[in-house]
Picture 1 (cartoon, rainbow, N blue to C red):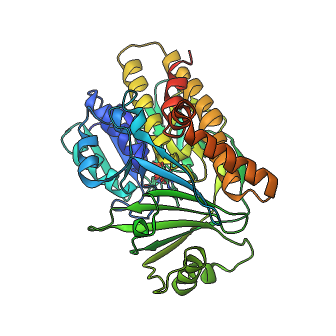
Picture 2: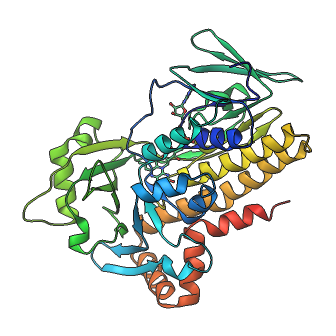
Length: 397
Ligand SMILES: Cc1cc2nc3c(=O)[nH]c(=O)nc-3n(C[C@H](O)[C@H](O)[C@H](O)COP(=O)(O)OP(=O)(O)OC[C@H]3O[C@@H](n4cnc5c(N)ncnc54)[C@H](O)[C@@H]3O)c2cc1C
């Protein structure tokens, strides 16, 4: 392929979505990915209604629906109290054609995007290529790889994750904080639905809060993943030990048979937003632009939304559109990253872990009242399903 019009750093959900949307717009695009094949780390698995809407026309949503598990209802629980509130997305049927969460692993979304991308001769993914630096001038951007190659294009989209080399190459600050505790994700084949848990459930507790969700896994009946906070002082090997993880699970949800644990992983959790999502010919999308805790399942969705808008704007500017379209991308996405993505995920964690007994009971009462009142439940669902944030972004001039 001759020089592409756009380079994308990173073949994660954000990078591949952007590449597909650019290719569909007739733009020559090259993705540079340091891994040698699609990465299968168990991470995001919840797809919200606006993401299914945005990916519908490309055919990606149909493939996701074929592989995913629909979750119209999610629960909020107290460890002692049991079910506190149930929220049913079906009441949003007039607001979205997809009134449910779809549980489908991130790596499956990536494989679906890759399959669709293969249909375009003017799109390519170069595997095993690590972006080391990027420099821009008046006419374009030059990317230097660790392998010593140079790639040149009119625009570069940094979708290279939380530690983005592209972001650092442009000296864009990544402001925010990192929680002292890491999150432990425990995967078990035990069917938590048989114990009354919804496919997506949050369990508040001042000490051992957790979030549970079902994923399709390799075959039915699927797997359950449970996310816990951990003691910052605890050694990593102890936290990752599967026998200890099974005990941790049994403490939360007693089971005479105990638990089989098939996987454990540990994540550092950050809340950060880049100071700019656009600097000249370089744009940022996905985790390169913002990172947040996984409670609410929003990070990957938000990155896909960034990618779709960034691709649309870059295509418009390449077709002769006003350069301000790219600044508007920054204004829109950065504003909602701060006002919705950061604010909501920080609040979700605070609600789950609230230690003050009076504040905790007040919050549980508020959630009960929200679920019981159809107007309040609808407002809550519009927010938590990311519909409100998408509408707010569209309204930013
Ligand atoms: C435990 C956990 C659970 C989560 N659950 C959810 C959820 O339910 N819902 C949700 O929406 N989000 C969730 N998230 C967040 C979600 O996983 C991320 O937001 C998502 O992966 C971001 O996608 P991305 O494409 O921006 O970045 P990434 O997925 O990180 O992809 C970046 C890509 O860039 C590549 N790359 C990095 N550096 C370079 C380089 N220098 N050169 C070339 N390539 C490079 C990487 O190899 C990678 O393939 C979760 C995260 C965690 C940790």
